[in-house]
Image (cartoon, rainbow, N blue to C red; front, side):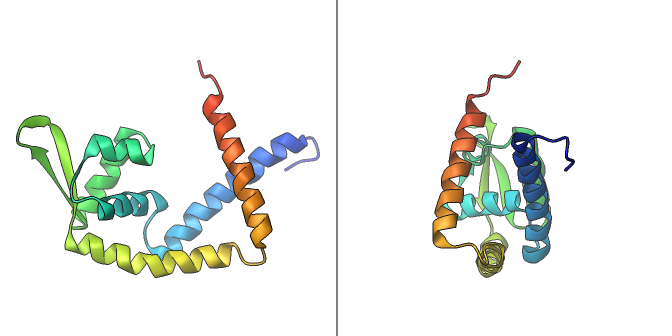
Length: 145
């Protein structure tokens, strides 16, 4: 950042940099994006779930969920089908390949988190988490036009 930037703007800049870098490094280490891994993890916990319910749980837009699921389906990690009683509803289910991928990703994810938080004390982690929660709550309250 430049010397012309306020401390507040520096926080925004750092958060953006960390988010971008974290996404790239996470995918390089685990072989899957955080968003797709989150979708697989939610499906791991459910037998079958509607795509719209899944979208609400991950809190990303429906078009992005559709793209992610199409790619995961192409890789054989999920299956999608129409609900027989209501053709408007798409049901999603994790395949055996998806379950295997989740299990393999757990170790990689834990290693990534461990390395990411290296030299950060438990107290600093708690403080960081608290601050990030407050920032998230503040962002959720911002009115958009």
